[in-house]
Image 1 (cartoon, rainbow, N blue to C red):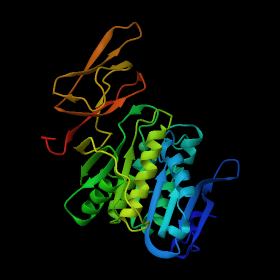
Image 2 (image 1 turned 90 degrees about the vertical axis):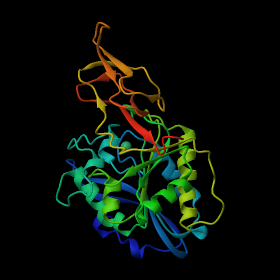
Image 3 (image 1 turned 135 degrees about the horizontal axis):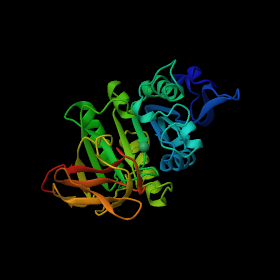
Image 4 (image 1 turned 120 degrees about the vertical axis):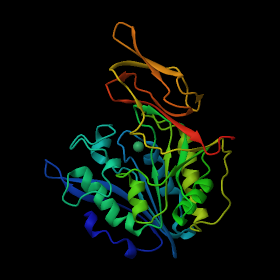
Length: 329
Ligand SMILES: [Zn+2]
C-alpha cells in the first residue's frame, strides 16, 4: 500500500496488522517502503505512535517495536498502537546514521516535503498520515555507532499542557534518567513536528554502538507499555525502575563541543561525570601519537554525550554537557 492510501481512522478493529508502506520509487523500479505494524483494540482509546531507526544505525527501536507487536494483545487494548520499526530504510540498509541517497538526516527534515528527496518524503508521510492522527508519540533513538549516551527518556519541559503531559508520561516510562528540554525544540526533529501539531511526545536514548543491549530493549518495551497504561490503553500496574538522574538542557546534539582539528580522539571523562568549565574532557592526537588539541569544558555541567568513534574530522561532535534539573539533586 502507498502511504497516501493509509486510513488510520478506519483501521480494522481488534487485530494485529503488518504491511509495507510505499514512499517513492527506487532506481531499480521497486519502491522504498517502510514496515508498518498496528495493534488495534476492540474498544476506543488513545492512538500511540512509536517509531524506530529514524537514524539507520540505531537498533533499539527496531527490536523493541517487534517485541511490542507480539506482546500487545488486541483484546486487552483500548485504542490504537501504530509502529514504524525502521523509519529511515535507506540509512538502515547501509547501517549509517543518515541516508546514503540524499545525505540527509531524517531527524532534521521534519515535517518533510511531499515532492522532496527520499528523506524529506519519509518525514512528510510520517507527519501527514501518522503524527496527525496520534494522541501521543514516542521516538525510540539511541546513540548509534559514533556516539555514546546513557539510557534515558527525553521529554518536553514546559509548564503548558503539552509539557505537563510529556513529563507525566516520561515519569511513567520509568527510564533511569529523565532529561527535560525547554521549548522551543530545535526544528526538523520528529518531536518538534509533533509539538507543532500539539501532540505530546517522548524520545529515548541509549548507548547503542551498533548493538542493542537487552537491558535497553527491556527498558524501552516496559517503558512503552507503562506509557500505554498511563494513557489508559492497557490495564495494570506500571513496571517501575529507580531514577538515578533528572537532567535539564536543550538536548541539541548539533551544538556540542566539537573537534577543532582532525585526528584520534580519546575521552578523559565518562558519561554522567560532573565537570567544571576548563576541565580537560579529552585529547586529539595526530597519527604519530602527539597530542595536538586538548578538549576543554566550556562550562560546568554533566557529561550526557561522548564521541565513541575515535577517528574525528573537524567539526565532529565530541562531548555534550547538560545540567541537573535542580542543582541540588
Ligand atoms: Zn537517533
